[in-house]
Amino acid sequence: MSPQTLNLTPDLYRYLLRHSLREPEILQALRRETQQLPGAQMQIAPEQGQFMAFLVQLIGARRTLEIGVFTGYSSLAVALALPADGNLLACDVNPDTTQIARRYWEQAGVAHKIDLRLAPAKDTLATLIAQGAINRYDFAFIDADKENYWLYYEQCLQLVRPGGLIMVDNVLWGGAVADPMVQDQATQAIREFNQKLHQDERITLTLLPLADGVTLAWKRP
Image (cartoon, rainbow, N blue to C red; front, side, top):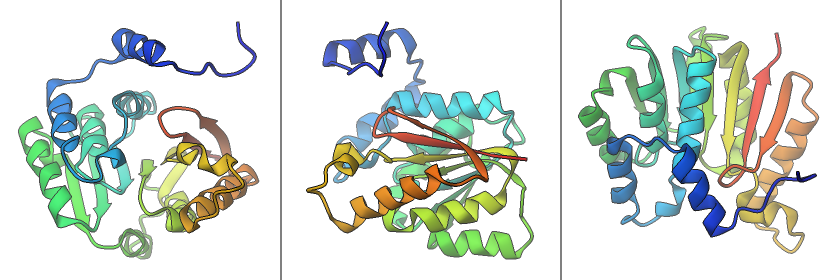
């Protein structure tokens, strides 16, 4: 018994993976390829992808959003968990990394479920709102430029239905959020985002020490 979350030593982390992770080969292959790329640290952890897929299945999600695709690990994990008629609208601005994502989506047979929009996410989300897509989505994942987290969150909160989930990545930011000596723009943006979310009565909130910190915001009816 412990009064706080355990510190995951390397041995304990390996134990966690051995006794929990059920990573399909296609996801393993994508993760291995991404590890060879510049910026590989932007890929989510495999246990985080599995957790996302678990949540999508748990709430019976059919329509989902993703803000920030990179090489497509999270979108592939979600698409594999969606039902046959499910859809993921994915937002990114990088045609090179998303080309890798497209290749794996095709190999996995889920490309038909994913609508990739290569444009600034704030513009794509604003268009969806203007088109009347309010409350139409079940789940959203935010993992893009930190300075715009609050904007993405506010847009997703309009688009996600009451009872839907918004998942936000990197909210512990390698521990920098708790270090007063770190004052760069991205870190300050995440601190402000976390503080605002903590006070937001429109949602039920939990912040988990999973990977680089994950926030779950359940939109209240």
